Image (tube, rainbow, N blue to C red; front, side):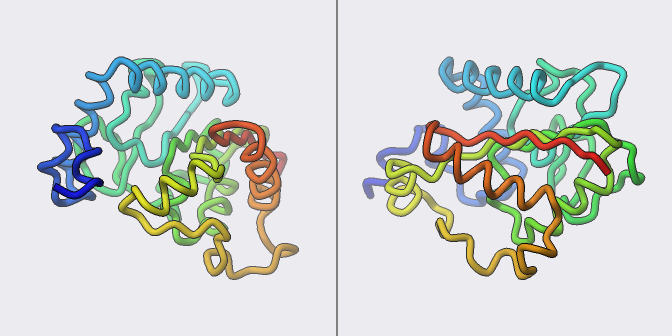
Length: 203
């Protein structure tokens, strides 16, 4: 058994298709059954509730819901993913969201922003669907020395801390949200074990 396999939870060793619906369901069971992970996710959702100005009258969307359980904490959140599985309301691409202009009060993104190949397009789409004063809350792993070690040697996904090549537009023509996010994440990444950014639309 390889060191990477040895480090995996027993429940995860049989997973082959990392993007399949069975994998998402397995992740959901792991998150809910492990006390620390459940507490961590609950804390993330509570942070989203506060920072995102959540209320049950508004329209709030979680992008890349995966195996999470946000509806247990924020019950009227619209969950979404790129594949259909249990607990998902909308199958969508963050680059082309099925919501009208100015119709969403808040967007929550937990640990999936780094999966977007065109972050500028995604953030532009967030701006399009948000109401004036709407909020995006993004929680991402931080690019710390420990994080770089884990993501380089113990993680299945490619790791590019520079992000070069993912945003083809010059900084001046990027959405204001993208310029704000870049500066905020670079600063919080130096201070905290995880990075979180809150952005408010003022279109």
